[in-house]
Image (spheres, helix red, strand yellow):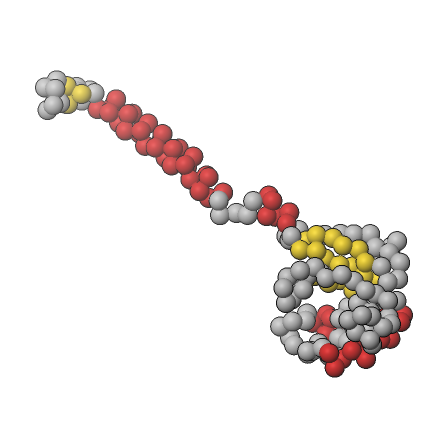
Length: 162
C-alpha cells in the first residue's frame, strides 16, 4: 500500500497513517506532561512547609550579657525555652536536691543524651553555669515563674532557687 491511506471503517474514506502516528505520539506526550504537572503538587505535599521547617530549626542566642541568676526566654517549636545563667550558690545547692529528683545521676538512657551523662550528669549541662530548659510545667503545661533567689519562700521554707 505504500503511501496510500488506510480505509477508515467509520467514515468510509481513507486515513493517513503518518498523521495518525503523529497524533498518537502528540497525545501521549501531552498526556505525560499533564500527569507530570498534576503530580507536582501531590509530591510537594509530602515535604514539610517552610513554616514547619522554620519551627524546628535551631535557635541561636547571644548569652554573653546574661548575668548570674538571670533567665532569657526564647521560643522553639512553639514552646518557651529558658536559658538560665546559674550562680555559684545555685551550683552548690544542686546536690542537696537529689532526693527530689526522679533520676538524680541522669542514668535514664532514654532521657539524657550521652554527652550529658558523660560530661556532668548531676548538672545536666555541658557548661555548669548554663542551663537550657523547656519552660513548661510537666503537670499542667503552664509556664511557671522563676524564683532564682535561694532562701525561704511562701511555698517552700527551704527553697534552693529555681
